[in-house]
Amino acid sequence: MFQVIGGRSIQVARLLVPRSAVLVEAVRGRKSRTDPVAKSKEGRIKVPPPVDPVEMVVLKERFTEYQMMMRALRLEFKEEVLRKKYEEETGSLAEERARQEATEHRTLMAFNNQENLRMLKLRILRIQKEKEEAERKKVEAAIQCEQEQQESIKEKERDILKLQEEAKNFITLENLDQRIEEALDNPKNYNFAIDKEGRVVKQTMLQ
Image (cartoon, rainbow, N blue to C red; front, side, top):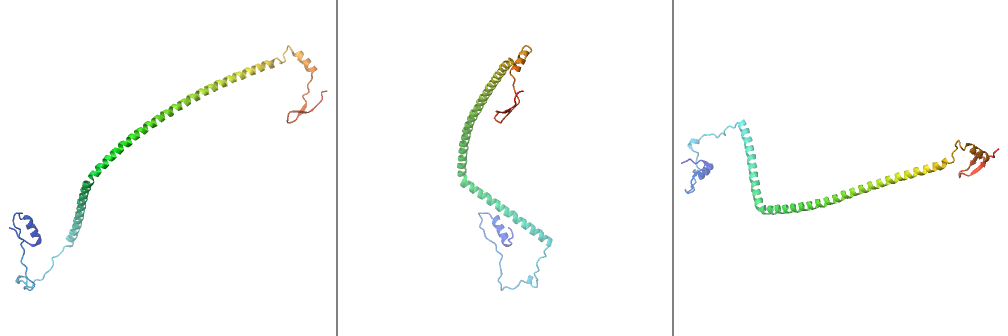
């Protein structure tokens, strides 16, 4: 049915033979070390086949690429097998961890909402107190301004009364002669010296 040459052909034969058939390996007969050389091979000099350097370089590069690809495929398959194994072993743990994380997230969100509500209330109270404080300062400023105006009016009224009192002693045309006579009758000496306390220490005599 097919020709068997070497071990590789035996493997191909194993794959092509049906499973129900009896597998018999076809092995080529070997001669012993003492057997003479075959007549067809007498005088033959075995020369290795010629090797093309360019072809050798190409084959070497392709073999290197083949090794790299096979290594990458083996690593990829190994990673996939390990990942599936890890998922099978830790699948329940992952689900439990996800449930715990979801529960913790809900708890933290509830705490966050409560904290936000508490801070909102505190902020409202602080703003209300600031408004009340601003209103109080505004009222106090208005009252102080009113008091200052009243004090200014009273001070002006006192100045007016004082000026009215002083106006009684002003020299006018009507009392000019009388004031001259009073000045002559009661002379005053303004030529004097005073010390640091304001006391008169030296004064000249009127002539």
